[in-house]
Image 1: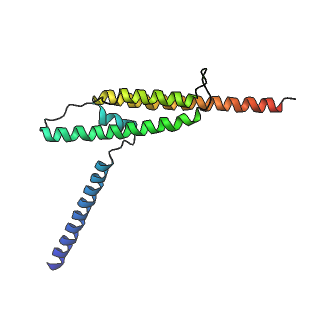
Image 2: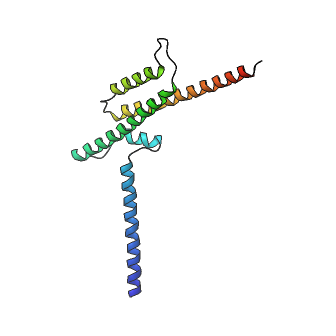
Image 3: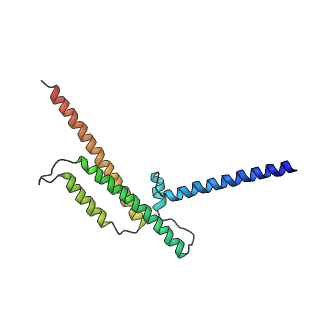
Length: 157
């Protein structure tokens, strides 16, 4: 009988430990709040019908969503500013494209600064990421063409 009680205690302790570790893992995921995939990003920001929440819970959820969107917007802004370093040549007025792009990015982010609609915010974030990636892809392609062009000129007699 004592052996059975000891086995039950060991099993109970193991189950309790498993429950606590799962709770800690779920708690850590809640602290992370950053999307790992595009589906998570869309899932978090697309408005869904929810069960009725009281005002405090609703305010907390809205704050969490806005904080997450704010973090994603800041990340996108930093990425765009970093990417502008690659645009070193000047435009027709002699102003470096880097400065022109940074000014336009700042203006666009300021215009969307007080947007509160999660769908609009998500659309802006996804559009910004796509535009950044497209610009970097075009830049890389043009650089490859320039390198091959220079190699061709160097090999020509």
